[in-house]
Length: 169
Length: 418
Ligand SMILES: Cc1cc2nc3c(=O)[nH]c(=O)nc-3n(C[C@H](O)[C@H](O)[C@H](O)COP(=O)(O)O)c2cc1C
Ligand code: SF4
Ligand code: FES
Image (tube, rainbow over the protein chains, first blue to last red):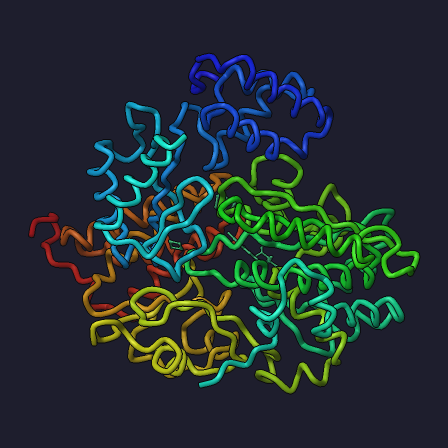
């Protein structure tokens, strides 16, 4: 599995924070998913090889066990991703309400295709399965926030709002 | 038609995190009664006739009796808040609006079978519920309803919240347990069943959020009261999620047995734009797709099954005449290919084969015998897959073939030429 993990470096402060979190759960294999979720937030939304290694070491579990979990769950990525992860729902209730057109609007507004990250590192565009807000279909999650029902026109405004957020910071 | 709000009665009326509000609305009475007479609880649950609301409809009292009857130094209660079935939103509504009823249901289960620890397995797609649940839990702990020595009874019941990480299969009970243990969410071979050997090999009750939210009022008001609502074989109310081509999508509470037509016309307000209803998928992504002609159907487990539909978790996805049903079937199979865990061959390979054949019918390249092969593969998956995912994933396509035969016609000659 490890050959799939991109071998790039995560910055030292992030790695230290991750090590500290992992260490508190030494010997607690059951906390692995929780640790991975927290680590990913600190490390450009990805579990790269260096992150996986430090978690394995600090928690005292084999690296293969860590990689095994990463490869199974959809929320984990081994490639570094943007600050905002846009996850467009493609399950049936959203599909029949026009999810594809909304997805195309995102691709156009961001000038990337599904799976890609914008060159400024701000957005990654992905599809996902049902996010549990089918009554707001077609729906999308951007990090922890839900938007829907969406029209292709609204997509342009949402993307602009997020770009604005960065400028304000 | 007016809703019958039993599960949703506190929605918008209490501050979700506040146990004081919940108590003022009659909450935690069931727990008090359970503590006063723990021995009686499993029998009351049996008498109530409550069946699981997560999709399979297993009798709750019977499930609890297995765990009660298995001696162990440690037992667990798990609340299944994975809600991964496309078309299901109800558990989110309950957790966001009335989390204490879920805690109370879990604590009553704990008292009834001698479990001191509960887990809520919350899907990662609901991160915005975590602050509400954490606040509510803290409040319940400081008020003495959850934690050590609950209500001065000498009994303990802790609750811990665990997050998923994006995997539909982790809604399956044993896959969920693997996930809590920190592993890949692959279902286990059964037996042993979780009631006897579940989380870390200990006797474990796992119930859906909506199931557990029914428990406090059953214990407080009695089995007879509960049986006065709903149908003979499925007492109580059900939360229905309406989605798809419908004017008023959302979650609504009605007694079991409510007619599907009522839900479509009166509650849902029909299809937008005056379009005609063409089909309904009942019971989520793995449920049956029925013809709009079959709309008059009482919604409980038995009636749905008899009519060729599936109650499941109470999902109704309405599909209007502008949608191509084969396109929907294709989308559904793609979902199962994506979400199959790959542990067993019938499901891992079978779903891919189903998609191949469905694409042929969509593109008009199906040849003589393809329909028979498609049905054969689907039927084989139903009987040979390890878990409910592979057993149920052929249902949408098999039901579509039955209810929309005109969509599965061989148009080309036997050499596959149109
Ligand atoms: C693939 C699959 C996914 C499931 N997803 C869920 C789910 O998201 N929520 C749920 O409560 N039950 C789900 N179930 C059903 C559970 O395995 C289990 O039957 C249920 O949690 C039992 O609770 P209940 O008896 O209260 O319904 C799923 C089953 C399968 C096979
Ligand atoms: S039926 Fe599918 S999801 Fe279930 S164990 Fe087999 S491969 Fe995994
Ligand atoms: S199908 Fe998109 S949110 Fe449920």
